[in-house]
Amino acid sequence: MTSPRVALVTGAAQGIGRAIALRLASDGFDVAVSDLPHAEEALTRVRKEVEARGRRAAVAFADVSDAAQVARVVETAVAELGRLDVTVANAGVAKLESILDTTPESWDLTFAVNTRGVFLTWQAAARQYLAQGGGGKLIGAASQAAHRAAAALPAYSASKWAVRGLTQAAAQEFAPHGITVNSYAPGIVNTPLWREVPEVFQALVDTIPLGRAQEPEDVADLVSFFASPAAGYLTGQTVIADGGMIFS
Ligand code: NAD
Image (cartoon, rainbow, N blue to C red; front, side, top):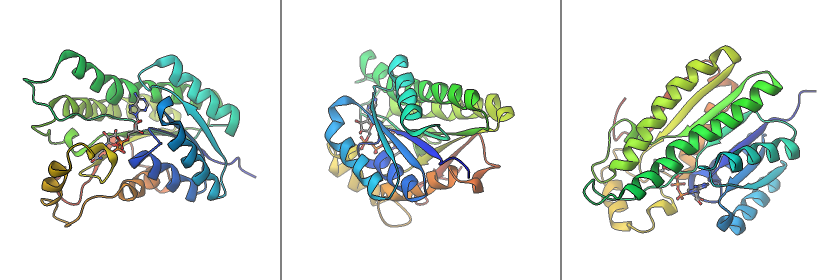
């Protein structure tokens, strides 16, 4: 009998990360979910939702910009669930601010979570994949802003372009080890990320050709594909799924 497949999702307490964790559980993965310590209550709920799908779950807290904390998350996933096969570096932050308004601190925070966080999460996961053998999947959160920058989101757009670059580099480094690397580039997704700016969210939704906001489950569909054997020949791609707003 083959070992159960195990996935790790960061930023899993809410929004897209939660939807991905639940979708992967429905797909048959045991799932380790991770987020910041302040999200403990929500993360515990996600853990129960994974278990309600008949899968095992593990919970680990980390700031994805901290290398030691991220390494401990991978250690916890492996200690509690036995191995690691799919890693989704989903945690991210976004702040609407012009270049003129962006402080160096705000710029650094955006890159610390969105870019360094993906790098550290993939690095720790890849080390585990190489140690256990047999390949694996690295998946990252980009954005449509990784293909066409948003004027109101300069730091965010740049941080997501960097994820797209890292996706291409990582795909080449890890291909010889049977590890594929792909990122998802959603459009305007109905999550708490937009809570502070509902009018901006609605104005953007009104421009979506498919005529509705993207739901977290729409993103989870794409990640489910990335995580599946059907995506075995796909690597180095940052795939736009945004209801037809922009084209690659
Ligand atoms: P969200 O704000 O609803 O959830 C993000 C989660 O990440 C939260 O649970 C938060 O606690 C966690 N997080 C934040 N900083 C962290 C850190 N330093 N360490 C660990 N966890 C941290 O966001 P979302 O809309 O679900 O977005 C998920 C990902 O998808 C992000 O990378 C985001 O940039 C990307 N994305 C979102 C949209 C959208 O429209 N919502 C569009 C394109 C891309």
